Length: 102
Image (cartoon, rainbow, N blue to C red; front, side, top):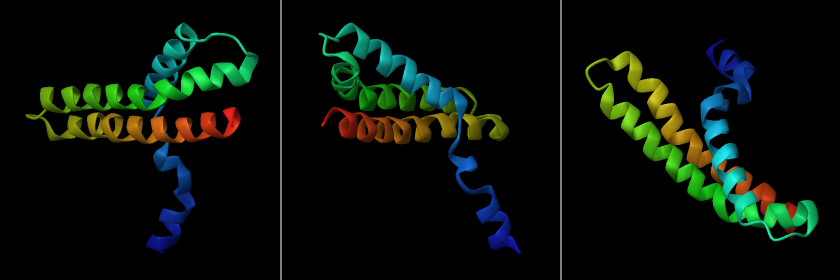
């Protein structure tokens, strides 16, 4: 019963909108700033360099959020989600951009 409940939730436990926005906005903006032409593939090549850096920046933001809320254990979870999921999203987006630009 417990295993079925966990499997039914599936990938939904890995979705965190603030983490996705941090990586997409920072990585996409830095990619746009370093874009030198070449259409969509060129843009993916430019973004690919910045997705992991954006994930690391999100991890730092999440750690700051955790350290600000150490006195209240209920607020540690969202900060930890941002800290861990932003680096995860950065790596996933890097792999997608690498596959597109190859």
